[in-house]
Length: 332
Image 1 (cartoon, rainbow, N blue to C red):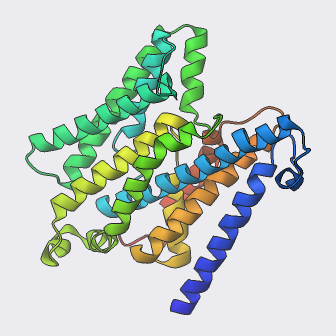
Image 2: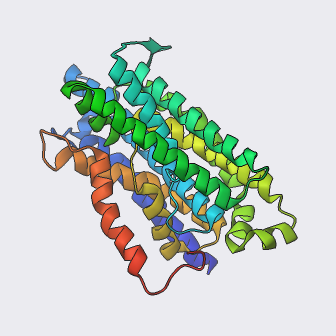
Image 3: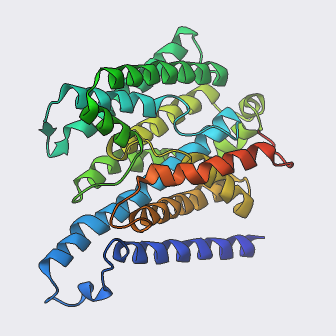
């Protein structure tokens, strides 16, 4: 069994490396690998490769890994196969922040970071704070309370987005809708550096709680009987994963279905033990989103499809399959 798992991981690592190597060369204009070695290559081509293509592939990989791991953690925490990183309203909070920035028409930046990304992240922080505050009113941190608080905040912010769109002119309304589709239209490495601290902390925290996730998936009572501080673990997971998702959404917009699809695909391949599932989800999540972004760049070139549209087109049928499949997960 361990040998089989090892072979699967080797295959996943190989697939990830191949995709990461090929993706930067693919796009509206194919770039030859000679750009690595030929110092006489066009400066324009070199700039496109190193300042646009490579950062874009890297941020797509990190974002996909973060969203997939967050979905895995939420599915175990809520014991619900349909839980996603956006279940608790983080994306809608970020969207409100971005929409307010677009509507006001301010053009600001802070430490080189775009004002829209900063506003979106502040919106995500507000959403996280509201959800956490609502759970504390009940003097507990039960899954049902957390889920209901997240859904309520999600609906409230979604209505605010509609209100802001209604008040906006055509240009601002289009900008809001386009941001809500998600995408990686970035230049340089600053957007990547802005999400790295939160994603690294979130990934490390989840990695330290894999045994607890295994027990939570079996039920809170069993986890308590095995010595797990359930409320403390869930609070930590909620804060760490929400900040991680908030940072990703603030830069890339809400990219749906990655956090729902990838953990299930990995469970079918590697099993439900989170000690194996987490690294598999990290690799496949990043690889999946890089592939989706590559497809988005080349499918109707020279135009570009928002990557959130691609993931939604894949996620819809997957969601239906998940609902109608005969053999349900034991925590569905």
